[in-house]
Image (cartoon, rainbow, N blue to C red; front, top):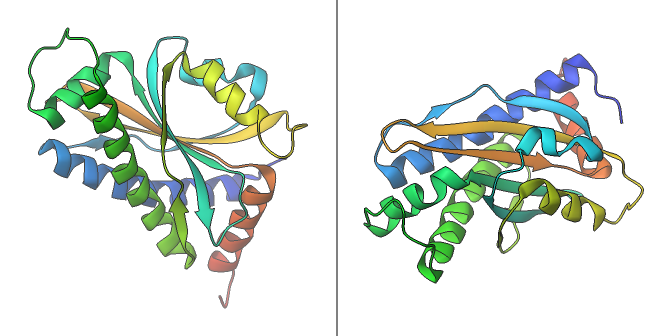
Length: 205
């Protein structure tokens, strides 16, 4: 599943637009400025996925990408352990940074993920001139690399050994919160998105 430099640039721009929409929604929720890293595009062997997400406990809010695009890809909001309670404290109006997570936190994380990922897909779908929608979210609080490996293993094409990861990090210094968005497309979805992007940037399109 090779990706050329020009294809990586096009994917990076697509992700940049989606992440900007997600950053705007997070900024509104937190009522503070959000900084966004330049998106990274990586072709990753599944066995090395831990190098990109770490081994520390994290909240993973997972969505399957649906709509006018080949199914089988996922969007993942990744919130490291140190940011989980800080983020839900802001949403729930609490202040204790050392408290245990409750069902209210879980509900808040699902809501945050749904709002941010919907904004991400609105931005990318607008560029591609298609409809892209998130499935209902699922929440896992676990070691992220194991959870992602399980997600990828459950895809229709079980022989996939590599995945393209788009990652951008959103940070709020005011609240000491960070999160990352991962787009995990399977090969058919990736090829379809690349074809759409090439049509957009080709002369005369």
